[in-house]
Length: 316
Image 1 (cartoon, helix red, strand yellow):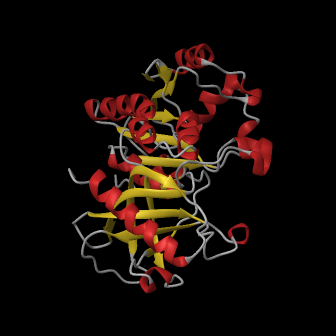
Image 2 (tube, rainbow, N blue to C red):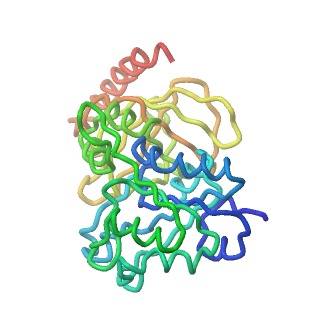
Image 3 (cartoon, rainbow, N blue to C red):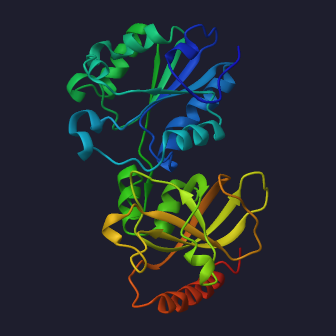
């Protein structure tokens, strides 16, 4: 059967004639702890001529109960789906976590999944997985249901770093603190921004530091400041080194009245055009964004920042 390499719903596997190995979770960030749950599903599916699938949720389930006060996601659904396919997942099912889904009882949760996915043979979850109405279901509930339905249940212990569990919560906190090295270490890859290049105010060009302005608005916003980055323009295979500012540009704008913008200045020769797609990988935090007394003072600081970033990235 032809499997869709994109976001799907349950219907994508309704007619599947191969055993389905399903990992379940929000998997925000698709970090190292998530890989411990997802990779066994991918491996088992390959070993048993099956299909590996991920059931994830968008928006975050907390939005149903807390609205705008719910958890801010690290990555967009589009980026998450691409990441999941990149590690070998065949099908990504994105389920809206609505009142109907939240009302499914813990005892009938697996039965519900089996109805949606008739070839479901195994589920993979983290040890702290909770599900069902009121989140009263736990691993033992899942095992009991799985035993009755002929579905294997795999519970994976949490992965730790420096004695602390790797979690999306830790990554969000580190992002907001500008701790890029910690973020990248917990993710297992560099934190990324992806989007389309848009027209800016051209101030960077006027002061000798032209920037590429990225249309990018994450829910969980990194600390406002200057960062060492590398980037890839759509259609190119060569990564370039750069320096980026993420924030509200207080020196030249009324900072409280504008949306944050990601501006990238290339430290190498680079050609790009408006509306092209760009992928930015964050390497290191340099300094906080701040307001300068003049544009000339800002220019002098950017020049210093460029030298710092060049030194940081001198070894690649």
